[in-house]
Structures are given as structure tokens and as C-alpha cells.
Image (cartoon, rainbow, N blue to C red; front, side, top):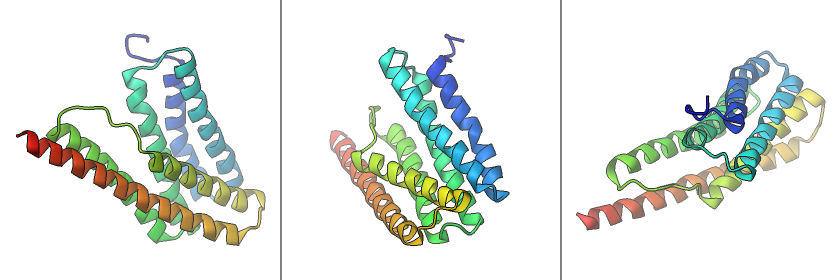
Length: 186
């Protein structure tokens, strides 16, 4: 398993990836409380696999690719599921999915056109991911655990929309600069 890069952090990440269909099924079945706990466990697993990989120096190329895939799959799937269930506005779901598809497409484009380089996530993107995850957890807690705070939900939706737009625009600016440097090198 070591030759494949399957160490403990990567197995935890695979577990998070496998929690995606379960979370979707729970949301679409209206079992928001259980979905909250599964989503929370997935969030904790993200922190745990990163801590173990860094602390015990067992980072792998597989993990570097698998971790963001698991994160994107979970967030996008839950946003779409909550949108289908009528618990998040469609415009926000479209915005979140569009941003992530654009980022993935830009990443592929940059690796195709520009010289290969490492693309670390932008700081605004990390904030955006945190806000998006917090909104999901809050909505699931409100629906499944009886927390009543509709005003907070509206504010979190607004914050998620703003950070999503800022993050997407920041990536577009980054890629435009990289492409401009690549063109100048020709």
C-alpha cells in the first residue's frame, strides 16, 4: 500500500470522499441531524489527515491531489443537495458550483498552457471554504437539531456569496498574470 501512497492520512481522506454519497442520501431523505454529524465528522477528518501528514511527515503526491478532490466533492455535493432540497437558494448553489468548476478548469488550463508550477490555495479561497463549510454546518444544525436562527442563515448566505465571488475573481487575476508571463516568455 505504501507504493500506492496509501498511508493513514490518505485513507482518512478516502473515508471523507466515501462520506459524500451518504451525506447526499441523508440530506435528500430529510435526515438533516444525521447529515450534520456526518458532515461534521468529514470536517474533522480533513483536519486530522492534514495534521497527521504534516506532523509525521507522511505527505504524498496522492494525498496532495486526493485531499482537495475530497473537499470539493463534499462541499459541492452538499450545496447541490441542499439546493435540491430547497434549503439553500439556487443562485448560491450555482455560484458555488460555477466557482469550483472554473477553478478546476483554470488549474487544468494552467498546467496545459503555462510552465508547470505549484499552485497553493489563495488565502481568500481558504476563508471562502471555511465560510461555505460553516454555512452548511449551520443550515444542517438548524434543520436537524432545531436551532432557529434564520437571520444568521441569511447573513451566512451573503458572506458565502461574497467570499465565493472574491475567491473566484482572485483566481482569475492569478491566472491572467501567469498567462501574461507565459506569453512574454514566448
